[in-house]
Amino acid sequence: MEAYTRDNMADVLRKHGINPTHQRIEIAFALFSRQEHLSADQIMAIVNLRHSETSKATVYNTLNLFLQRKLIREVIVDPSKVFYDPNTRPHHHFYDVVSGRLTDIEAGDLTLSGLPDLPDGVVTEGVDIIIRVRPQQTQPA
Amino acid sequence: MEAYTRDNMADVLRKHGINPTHQRIEIAFALFSRQEHLSADQIMAIVNLRHSETSKATVYNTLNLFLQRKLIREVIVDPSKVFYDPNTRPHHHFYDVVSGRLTDIEAGDLTLSGLPDLPDGVVTEGVDIIIRVRPQQTQPA
DNA sequence: TAAAAAAATTGGACGCTGTCTAATATTGAG
DNA sequence: CTCAATATTAGACAGCGTCCAATTTTTTTA
Image (cartoon, protein in one colour):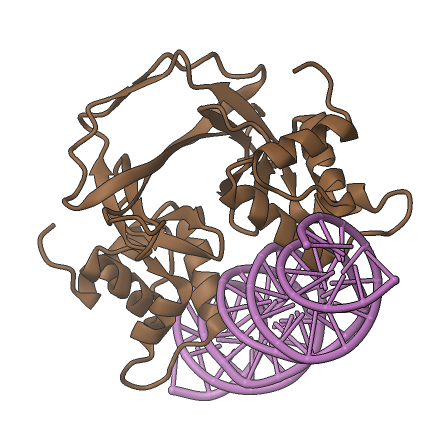
């Protein structure tokens, strides 16, 4: 899988049982071609750059559909908005609390030990690890 | 430090450089006496149980002040609301995605190894680890 | 203590993110 | 092509959190 084109995005959608409509292809293409963490409003802005063709409702419908079908993940780090992440391999995040920028940490090398047993009757759905960072700076007094 | 009373909450506030007003004491008492993760609206409900005396603006002002002064922490797990956590010792969380319940994981026993170096020019502000769990259940087809 | 200054609180308007609904448009099957 | 199923839409709406200017409370000063 080298380049992301609108055509192979359609295939990816089909493989996940999603009917590839224009809007869905554009939204998927926005996320996958950039390989970035984007918020819903950023995605809407990108998709409507040339001519407005996708409504807010469709952006949210589509992102939630992609989430359900596990085509993308959501990243909850900012209290005011969700980010959508086209990388579904196991990984974690640096979060720059000043700029709001998210950076991936590959999960490969990373181990978490000493976790207590899960409470009874529950199963793990996922593990989110977020390293919050800020630009090093001479602190104001 | 055994019991949390309104009187010793005032001391705690003073120790953190916060002027202990009625409203601030009630809000701190709500969080510390319960040792639970509460959202702003839950805190407002608790504080106004007997007679309404604290406005929404004050609840938010106060929680943000407590955060600044590092009296409490915020926990960002639910896209729709922030939880406030009176436990500032290093620890992490189980989050039941169905009930929304948060449970502490003491950081003591827990180690994270294999972290890549920080990006240049940034310093760590904190590490959040969230284990998302759901009640074990025969899955509907 | 009284008077003045500083700090905190307030209601309500507001903005933003995300959901919902009912109407319309598009798609796909036969 | 026709019909049914699916997707999209605009706009109303709801919830969380912020902001503002006016008021109240607290602290300072004398």
